[in-house]
Structures are given as C-alpha cells and as structure tokens.
Length: 233
Length: 321
Ligand SMILES: Nc1ncnc2c1ncn2[C@@H]1O[C@H](COP(=O)(O)OP(=O)(O)OP(=O)(O)O)[C@@H](O)[C@H]1O
Ligand SMILES: [Mg+2]
Image (cartoon, rainbow over all chains, first blue to last red; front, side, top):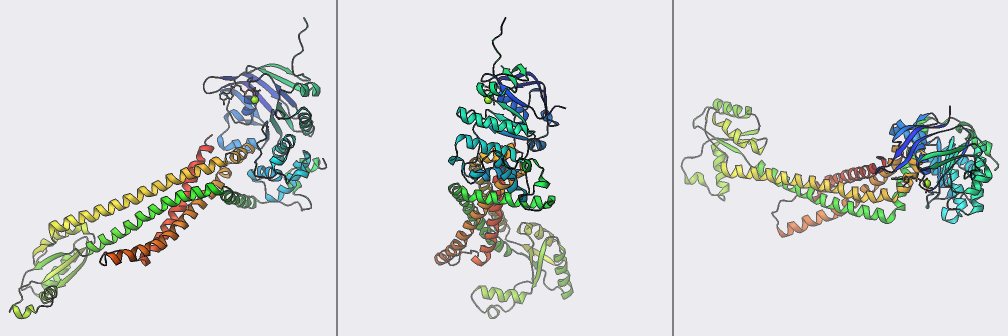
C-alpha cells in the first residue's frame, strides 16, 4: 500500500479559487519526490492537505494509513506525529535555544523526559548541529536555522518529511547542503516530499519529479528534471 | 554523523546515553507532561512580563470594583437583616384568659407556618417597657390600673411573611387584635428586598465584567504565543497540551490579581470603617473582622475562576481550526 495517496482531489478555497483539480498521486515508502511548478500551481496546498492543515473539497487523501479527508479533529494530532514538516521560514521559536526548540517538539507530544536528551542529541547530530545546540536562532546562519528546523521535524522519528521550499531563503551552496541532508535522511528510510523552485538541485539529483500547473499534475517522472526538455518534433 | 543508528531506533531502546532501558508507565508520562505544561505556563507568565502586568492590572481593577460591590451588598444585607429582625407582629389577647387559654393561644401562634419565635409578653412587662420608653416615668403610680393587655410578640422567619402571619394570627382563639405597623412595614420590606436585589445584581454584573476583562487580557497572552501554538499543533500536540499552559497562565494572572485585590481591600476596609464611624457614629457598618475573611475568600475564588475562564475562552479560537 502506498504511504501517501491522493485520489481525484480538488481543493477550492473559500472565495472560489481552485488550487487543485483532480489530482491523483501515490508515493511509496522510502521515495524522494520533488514537487515543482510555477508559483500558484498548488504545491503548498497539496502539502497542506497531507498534514491536514486544509481539507480537500473533493477526493480522498490517505497518509500512513489514515483517511486524512475524514479524520476526526481529535485524531489530527496522531496523524501529525507521523509527519515532519519544514518551511521556508524555519518557524523556530526565537526565545529558545536550538536544543530547546527540538526538545519543545518532543515535549509537545508527551515524550517522557527521560528520553528527550538522547533524542534531541541524535536529531541534532544527524543534521550536524550538535555543536550549536546552545545557540539561539538569531545566532545562526540561514542554513543552520533550516538544519535546526529539520532536526525538530525529525526528532519525533516521523515516517514522512514534508518540506515546503526548504531552500527558498538560502544561497545556492547552502541550498545544496540542505538538499544533501534531505537525501541522506531519505536514504535512511524517511519518505521525503519537497516543493522547490531550485532547478539546479532537481536536475542534478534526478529523483522523482511531479509537476503541477494550475492545480493539475502535468508530469510525473521517476528520474525527472526540473522542466520537461523542449519537445523535439 | 556519529549516531544515525541510535536515532533511528524506537523509544524503548533509545532511553539514552548510559541510562538503562526501562519502561515508562502511562501515568509517569502523564504526570511529567502535566508538570512540563504547568512549567510552560509559569515560565510564560514571567517571560511575558509587561503583558502579564497589563493583564493582572486590568483583572485587578475589575476585582477591586467587584470587591466594592460585594462589601456594599453585605452591608446592605446586614442593615436589612437588622431592620427586619426588629419587625414583629403583635397580637393583643382578650383580657381575663386563663393561663391554659393563654398557653393555647401561644401554641396556636407557633404552629403558623413561617413563624420563627413567639413570646408571651404579660401586661406588667408591657407597662414596664412603656415606662422605660418614656424615660423611666413611674406609670404604675400615675395609673391606678394597668390599661395594657397581654400580648404575643410573633417574629416571622422572613420579613415578607409578616402580612400572612398577621392574617393567620387573627383567627387564633383569644386574639382580639393584630398589628404590625402595616403600611410602613410593608414599604420597608419592599425596600430591603429592592436593596438586596440591586446589590446582588450589581455584584453579578461586576463578576461578568471581570470575566470579559480577563478574557481580553488573556487574548493578548494567547496572541503572543501564537507561534508556539502553531508549532505545537504542527508536531501533533493534542488540544489539551495546547490549552494547559494558557490555563495555568490565566490562573496565575487571576490569582496574582486576586491577591493584590485582597491586600488592598484588607487595608482599605478597616480604614474606611474607622473613618465612617468617626463621621457618623451610628451608621451600622459591618466590622472588619466579619468582612475581611469572606471578602478575601471571594476575591481569590472569583479571581482564579475568572482567570481560568478568560484563558479557556481566548484559547478556544486557536483550537477551533
Ligand atoms: N488560504 C488560501 N485562501 C485562498 N486562496 C489560497 C489560499 N492559499 C492558497 N491560495 C491560492 O491557491 C493557489 C495555489 O496556492 P499555493 O500556495 O498552493 O501555490 P504554490 O504552488 O505553493 O505557489 P508558490 O510556488 O508561490 O509557493 C494560488 O492561486 C493561491 O492564491
Ligand atoms: Mg508555496
């Protein structure tokens, strides 16, 4: 059974804006998927449906065995414990150290305190930030902040990592570091879905590419590139 | 990357660097969560320093007004109770009743529903009281015969029962006339009832105002922690996890405001009583010893309740999504 599955999904925002139309997509455990497409194509919307920040207007969304489209509100937290989510703007708490930011996410899901130090350390070592554990977000570079936010997303050991333009605020070299980190995380078994406008990264990595345009899947390639090569007639 | 293997392992095995693996019971986990969330609330209270001060002072203002209403209400009630306690129905007995008949009349009066006490006042006693009321004149000398009848003084449980008790007394054998100062007393009872009602209403309104005030104050608190709430929800915190620190913070704010209000009222009330009695010695005000303790208890109870309620209401907005 696929880990992520969308069937005939439509998303119409209040006000009538159609963000997704008839999207069907399935992602197996362990895959790495780039979600590409022009701005406004519906990439972020698709991710939001997966962690149930939004509900589909029509269609089915299944994630890690959960019927997300008809999840009871009380079950939403349980779904989210199987997901890590990372954003362009990091969303770190400014008044807590890196360590505390990661520990906060563990605490928030009721992790027994005895487990927390080891888990935080493991997550920070994985992203290569253990040495900066006591730094506050403002003392970190953009790349380091994104590492901290990835550590937070992974601390709870989710099966899926969703990343919405994780390199959007970073320079090319740092972007590359972050993507390599995500690849490594993927190699360890975590399924990764990442939206991006970063052509270089997509073209070099050659992973699965799903392209959205105006809310529709127009391309889905296993060893894809950022853009379809010019058609040769 | 020294420890990917460690990282990937599941909780039971990861219990850590040098620590023996051990099961953590659900209860233990729950207790530690509550402790953590409570600490989050307390820390939030301190970290949001200026905002906490703002919230506490607005709740404090509302509680001070509430305390004022309460003190006024209690004093009015005491006055009303004292006035009402003096209201009696007087039943005049026919002259020449045998002791058994008088006792029968007294028993009959006692059986009327709503009657608290019945006391028999012999005519000699009535004369003595009249002498006293007139300033110690020896009436027994002036009048050869005591013109006053024996009476029953009947006190009802509640002032508003006066009229009904009086009606019932009229049909008691041996009673010739019943009086309770009809018009004046009825009006007085109406007045005390009005005063009580108004006081209670004012107290209720001010209590409600306190809730609104603290809801607004705590909305700021919730807003300031919007990002934390967002992240908690993102990583899969349950509603209770999100709510708890705010409830703690609201409770603390309400409690601190209540303690401040209590201190202020504890100082102010005795001072005000002393000043009032200096100015109007006969003004019936409740002594501080009777007021301060219940007032402090009420302020603490209302303060914490209002803080909790305010927090619960303002956090609901975030959890609705
Ligand atoms: N909360 C919302 N309410 C109404 N319309 C929305 C909302 N969020 C997104 N939209 C609209 O839905 C469409 C898809 O938006 P979405 O954010 O998913 O695009 P995107 O592919 O992530 O774009 P970008 O590459 O710029 O991030 C857009 O037209 C956008 O204006
Ligand atoms: Mg987007």
